[in-house]
Length: 286
Ligand SMILES: [Zn+2]
Image (cartoon, rainbow, N blue to C red; front, top):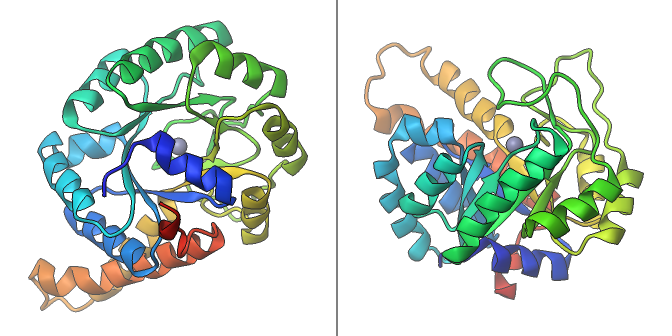
C-alpha cells in the first residue's frame, strides 16, 4: 500500500526502527528493491532524487505508484533533495507522497524561509516534508550535492528550525557524508549530538549519507532515535560491481540475462541494511 511519509515514520518512531530510503534510478532497481522489502516484510521508502527523475523521465512515476499500491508492505515515494520551490511543485504534480526540501546550503534564515514555503505547499495537498539542517559532507564527484566538509547540526537551531518550518521530519548532520569514503577517511558519528537533538525534537530524525559508516554506529543511531536512513551509494556499488563482472562475458546482450544477477547482488546489500536498521518484519505494525 502507498502511504504518507508522516504515517510511515510515526510507526518507526513508536517502534524504534529506521525505515530504509533506497534511491532508485531505473526500473530494474525499483522492482528489485520492492521485492526484497516484501521478502523481508520491511516498510519501504522509494527515494528518487531530481537527477534520477530526470534520468528516468517523470513518466516512470505512474509505474512506481502502481507498484506501491499493490505492494504487501507500506511504501512512501519520496522526492529526495528538492532544492527549489519549482522542483517541489514538480514533485507534487508527479505524484510523490513525501518531499524533501534541502535548504542546508543556504544561510539559516533563508533555509527557514524557503523550507517553510515548500512545507506550506506540501501540507496544502496532504504531503509530508523533510527539511535539512547542517550540511552533510560530500566525498566524491559522483555523490549528491553537499559541502566539502560537514557542518554539524546545532541542537538549538534544530528546535527553532522545526518550529518555524513545520517540517514533519528533519535530516541532521552528525557526521555522515554522501558518497563512498576514500580509504584514508575515517567517518565517525557524533552520537552524543544525536542524543541531544533527539531529546528536544519530536519530529522523526533522518540520516543521510550512511553508506560506509561503521555498522555498529549506524545500529546505535537507530537505537538513539534515527527513523529514516538514506541509502544510495551502497546499493548502486553492489549493482554495478556485479554488472562489471557479468559483462566480462562479451557474448551477453539481453538485459534479462545481464540484469538479474546484478539485482540479486543489490538485494543482498539492501537486505543487510534492512536488518541493520531493525526494519525487517516491521510492516506488521501498519
Ligand atoms: Zn541525501
